[in-house]
Image (cartoon, rainbow, N blue to C red; front, side):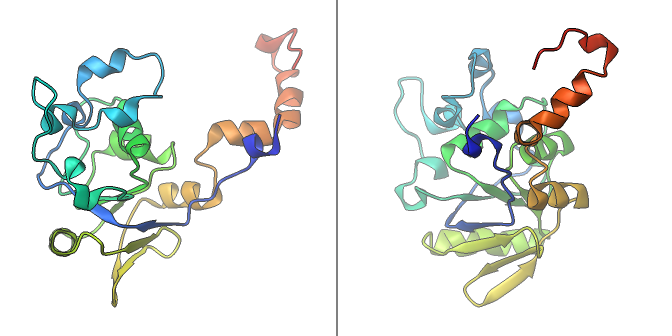
Length: 208
């Protein structure tokens, strides 16, 4: 096992440019069409976010922020109310993360979606309706504006402005401590895992 495989990653801040997606109640069916759920791995999920809104039946690009060259390379997504509602498919945050989104700022999120994001290290933080409207307008007016989402301090900064953000304390603690990544935690404590496994009756014969 290499050291890199067992390194705990603490997520305290995400910075970069942003891309806005306007609209309330954007569900996971829109984020990732159901036909892509049959893929065995998440490897190509980054090709599919908002696919049916970004391309027509012949594959030609449609007018959509994720297709707009001005927003290419954005690492922060701005959204409105109840983002990620609908089915609980984890493919939705996987698709966004693999597209390049490393933090989502919105008015509110569906609880299961926010939980799925957290356990893969993708922070979902909330601001007021007035603030998200201001943020979306700011990035639409200047797509090169850089934002810093500070998970530890619960703030978002850009230009000369700093505003408060919020997220459940369980999510904030998991992200900033690195405990969001359960697989890496297990790898980092493999000796303890093996020792515990030998004491479990249903793990008889565990060889490590």
